[in-house]
Image (cartoon, rainbow, N blue to C red; front, side, top):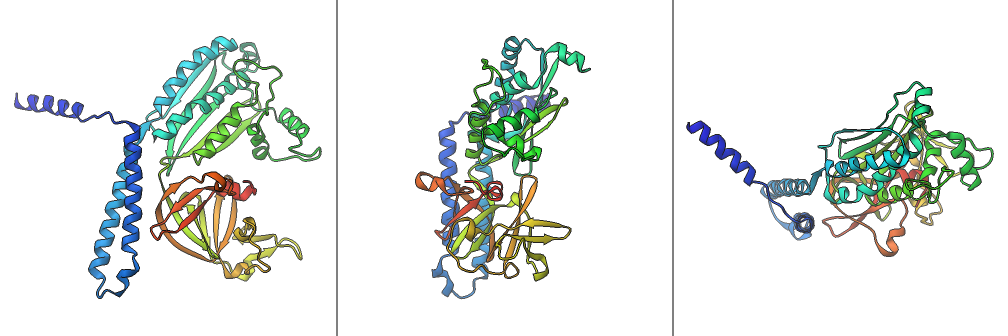
Length: 404
């Protein structure tokens, strides 16, 4: 009898443990935890402590304090995480409306709905994902007679999946429809001047043009698509969320649009770098390798050219000099063999970034760039350091593409 009473009491205690807290209060807590982290780092690294005697006990205490602050940061981050199912449930309801408007039979399969994501991200994901679903329903899936003729089931399938991969959440919208029409997309891209008449871009590059403002392959505008604004909205939102997009399509088989979004927007695990007098930060998950190249690994593409390549085992990686990229007027560049090279993952390719020094690995407080600074090229924002300095957080993909 007593065991049964304890079980009921445990259930009541568990049910009463849930609290409803406003997102503004959680955001305020996140800001305070960020300030606490900066204050602790500033105190521990204060120059006034350089003249003390035995620092052994102090360093041990400082290490314990840093570990506690790190745990507080992680706990505060978890408070703002919600299941992505909150977004998926709203999208499920729209499928019936899409069936009615397109006259197609559509089945929505949801995978990984319990995956946790930042509440601020979840609040902004619905509209972009809705545009992708509409494109899949209107452009991707064929009419019933077309599907039967192609040997496919009558009912088209759209898959909506989510999974945490490292420090990112990967959301994939896929369909088993007709796939993207390469020739049609390339012709429209050429008419708009995005590619020359003789250029034959790789598929991975060509698919990116569908995110250009006003780009559409629809022959007529419908309630679902054709205005050329949906994928542009998705692209803009993903940049704001420090995310990236990948598109994979096979004609006659289907299309997959993958969204890669950081789990948390408040804190970022980074490697700090110094190039000249400037500080940079690179997210740890973007780093493929850090190397100290020898003279035999460094090559110029042509005589008199500043374009360089790094030989990395069996492959050649293009080099991006930060001082050149950001327009510093330097008459002579330091030889590549005299630098430390950070090899970054930029989507499906690599890029080598030479720096003077690798400083440290830190979990930094991220702040977006605003005003005039919002125009700084290839940056997610800035990282506030405990020393009072500010480091620019690099976006590897835009750095590799030479984009703003």
